[in-house]
Image (tube, rainbow, N blue to C red):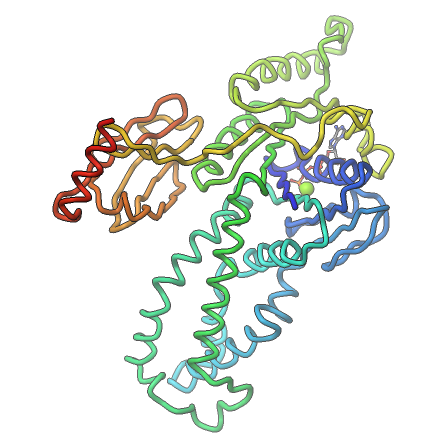
Length: 428
Ligand SMILES: Nc1ncnc2c1ncn2[C@@H]1O[C@H](COP(=O)(O)OP(=O)(O)OP(=O)(O)O)[C@@H](O)[C@H]1O
Ligand SMILES: [Mg+2]
């Protein structure tokens, strides 16, 4: 099973590239699902067939498509077949029994970002179902996608921390001590704490599993789509940094809507066309240097909107070649070591790829057993492996897109014999 995510600035061609790739994969015999995770769905329009619902529908031979409806899913069937509505009812009943206005109480049970989370869980469900060889995800524009992809990490930690606190808080409010609220708040009354605990636990587990799948470069790859415009390129570069920070493997760049493949005689063009094409050329020249480690594929501006299988096939031909022996849409560069820990002279070095970041933009903070890496407003909390959690950070450097953090065993936290062994191993 492989997962390909397509993201980039608004309007650059994410949906077009995702749909064309899914069609090509299906055409080459892979059972494929193309899934829109963008709340402003346009996958059905791009495919040019009938409507596409929240659940996968067949749109071609070997090709299924779905447009996840986060809001409806959230309202009707979230987590463990209806557990969530039961929890929200219980929470709002409990909170209003505690004296809160029922409307305010209901509002409080809606977590922000929940509809996005539902989209992720929908992806997790399809992956777990194991029906497909490939799942192609048409993502929302970059900012939203980054929030979505940071969610498993962020929410998982949030739940981990919130849950005990949350229990204490409810108890201190006298809400957990009560066997059940008054009859006026009855209604769906799950076994309170246990149901809540179970749901939080389940959510925690689904998120951890999802995070593992999405950050496994052998399964999930992200493709950045841009147009040859400086803003789209800048956004793609920032996305590459943030995605790497969160542990996602970006394995390709697609430059779409290229007006001039280098053959045009610009002097024979109307002035605005010539200026547009020349501006595109300047950006195109910068693309390979921005992503030196990644394959860059170009798609021409087709002159009309690529809607429907025939036009999308043309896009796929440009991306992957027309013959089955050409580029495999699933193939990409090897990413065996996005994050590495290596021994070095009695110390340990943690290496993390964060392309395009400048050292002035990177901040490191040790928070207990975690390392907080902040890059331009994005924060990744890296859980330090046991070995490193017993070390002190003694240095850090950023060079050629790789952040290296030096850890030195902390004698106070290391048993004497282990420390000697580590020093010996490192010194070798
Ligand atoms: N190579 C191309 N040539 C001509 N038109 C194109 C090409 N690629 C995409 N388009 C058109 O550009 C518009 C935007 O493309 P698309 O919907 O794929 O972008 P998107 O990145 O998914 O946008 P959004 O951010 O709104 O989801 C569409 O009308 C699409 O048909
Ligand atoms: Mg789109």
